[in-house]
Image (cartoon, rainbow, N blue to C red):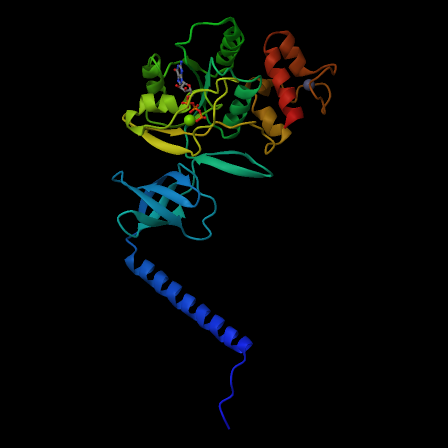
Length: 330
Ligand SMILES: Nc1nc2c(ncn2[C@@H]2O[C@H](COP(=O)(O)OP(=O)(O)OP(=O)(O)O)[C@@H](O)[C@H]2O)c(=O)[nH]1
Ligand SMILES: [Mg+2]
Ligand SMILES: [Zn+2]
């Protein structure tokens, strides 16, 4: 009896099994090679990540493109990690050390971690583009919820004074009274940069703020080697063009780290509860729980402690108004 011939279907199946075996064997070899060639575990700092590639800095300041072991969750710029070297340029991250602090923001329906181990949030704003009505309060809410101090930096102080700046100027006086210091600087003329450097000394700080306020320009002025890309405002709308797309950490000479981040368009706080938003208004705190009605919305109810505080000048009208706007919009 002649040998039974395989049908086309059987042939196809056999080929597919062989291909799978080969793939398994190859990946096993790759894994074995990987394991054999991995250097010892060592500490490192995640200075940026671009998609799935993590940029890790070793203790000598060299950079490596790294992959990530499974089940490590989402890693972010600022993470202190343990990694193993593969070759001169690459490695693999195997563990993440507990974070001292974490800043999150909403990402569609989820909460996204932006950066970790930061000591100070530098809210960068400018005389152009001027911040929208609630922008500064939104960043301050993020800072309060991350339990981090905030410094407001107003860039482009070289621009000649224009009457439209007055409103921001008045608000800055109030922020200062509430306990948020502010500094006027110019990345162009370098005015105010020494004071800024002093405020950043020994800390890891993140520059946050609208697109086009000059975060990357400030970074370049502070860390000339960084050579971060910057871009002019749009000619027509005078808005920023969302030039920076990744959050990246740089070193300043004086033992400080500084992180540049992308300007966020339409910056919402829907990942935070109403209570968290309330907690984000520092000067409201002594009055919360003091209203006549437990479910007081702090609008026109009789006996509202916040409204009373507003009448005697302990709360600025624009802050209570912004609180209501943020609660209703986000
Ligand atoms: N007049 C003046 N212009 C400045 C100053 N700093 C930055 N600019 C200009 O502002 C524009 C935007 O600067 P960027 O540094 O790209 O702004 P950014 O905040 O990093 O923007 P994104 O990366 O899009 O979030 C550029 O045209 C800068 O030259 C300054 O101190 N004075
Ligand atoms: Mg930028
Ligand atoms: Zn009330």
